Image (cartoon, rainbow, N blue to C red; front, side, top):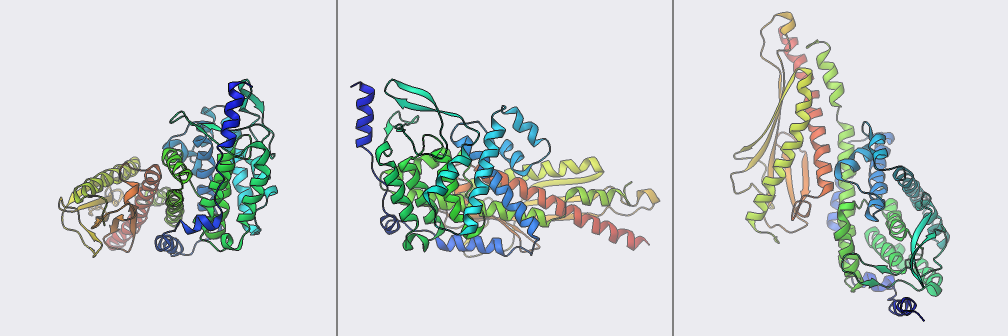
Length: 476
């Protein structure tokens, strides 16, 4: 027997089965207060058409489908690329093509897989082995081969889709060089039967969707039932339960990969809460992403407002106060930068825009929030017309619209506390979790800030149109 064969038998023997759901549930919990608050905020949005709601959820699906392949190293993405493809902005297909001829088929297969997940969720039927095998077929539709461990080492093998593995697929971790054991080939069917039975149990079906998603995902990756594609299947399977609860998938970006693997490794050590917390954080990310998408959809577009203007008128705390204040300053710089990008676009249309961060006393403080120690930071955004009545040779002051946001920071800051950008003259609050800023700004937050800036500038331009109307009516 060769050394490779001996190692495979050793790894088979080291397999540690996944826990029962009863054990999982007894050692984990979900912050339901935060979950309920985020979901209530989403549901408090003004009534929107079914088409707008569908579009917001489609965007979340495209985020999830694109980055699930990147997590596995099938291709590389960055924040800008993911944003472009998810929102189908101008030239997104060209940008996708630049990644290589194989990337689009992989992405489209993953999109179809999430469509299948939504179909499973809508039917609300218990998960079956047959459904999981079909999910594997969908996810891997564009993939023909994979690398497998054989008695003579790694070899390229044909990937049989929708069937359980026939060769061992223990994983060599690239991060630490150690081997990780998954279910041996001969017991994989029995383990998959056991997993599906757990997913059909009364306790599982009554549990919180985050607990369901985390458990189903973890159980599948522990078994690793397929020759390849197990991570993609697990992430899609987890989304069945969030689709059922809140009509959206769980978005895990490629930049979450290290934290994702850390949480899975923690669960392997029996620290299941680490993975539940990770899945909760990503679920909250997704809720906020969809909410911001809805707010963007509910706002008038910048193009519409500019066209209207140009036509008739212009031919507790984990972190110290110092850490929180510095993070707040960094957050404001990013928001200011994105807002500046947006207002710079309108100067082409003879509309001036100005954005600046100011220091001074703000408004709306609460027992849970304060202004930063450097005197309070405020985002000042202003758009104004360039003499809207110039063509009539009438000297009137320019029409001006101003938006002012106060930065509030948490008094006792832990990962789950929030920074808030509060609109001074309205009820709008742009909330940012501390763990989205510290230790580094998250990619999902970067995306939300960009969407926030687009929306705020578009709304300001719509208000500017109304102000121009008022100025000209006063002239008449």
